[in-house]
Image (spheres, rainbow, N blue to C red):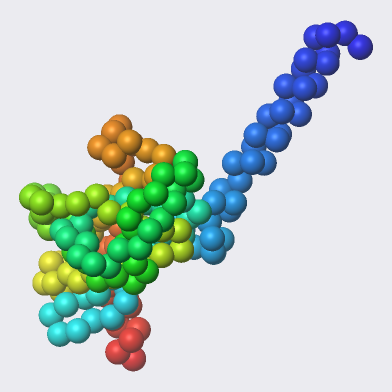
Length: 173
C-alpha cells in the first residue's frame, strides 16, 4: 500500500474514534434527560418552586445572591478545588423572564456570587406565580466548568408558562 492510502485509512479510522468519544449520551448521567434542565417542584400559594438539575458529568456555574452556608467541597475535572452548592440547596439565582414584544424582567443581584453545582446535584428556587404571564419564559444562565465565565459562549436553561400551566392542571386533576 502506498503512504497516501495508509494515511487515508488512518484519517478515516481516527475520525470514527473521535465521533464515538463525543457521543452526547456519554456526558449525561440520566440519558433520558437533558444535560441541564429546570423542572417544576411544587406550588405554594403565590410561589412556584423550580429545581435546576445538573445532569452532566461536569460541574456548572450559576450566579446566585448568597450561597450562605450551603457549601460543599468539589474537585473540578482540571483538579482545582472549589466550593459548590450542597445538593437541593435553596438559593436565589439570577434569572430572566421574557415576554413576547416587551422588555424582559427578572431577578438580578448587584452582589451575586459565582456558584458551582456538582454533577447530579440540583438547586431549588422560587418564582412568583404572577411573573409567569401568558407566553412568558423563565431562563437561567449557566456555564460549564471548562468555559470562561462571561466569555463568548452562554447557555440558558428555560422553563415556560405553558409547561407550568400543564403541570399545575395535571396536578389539580
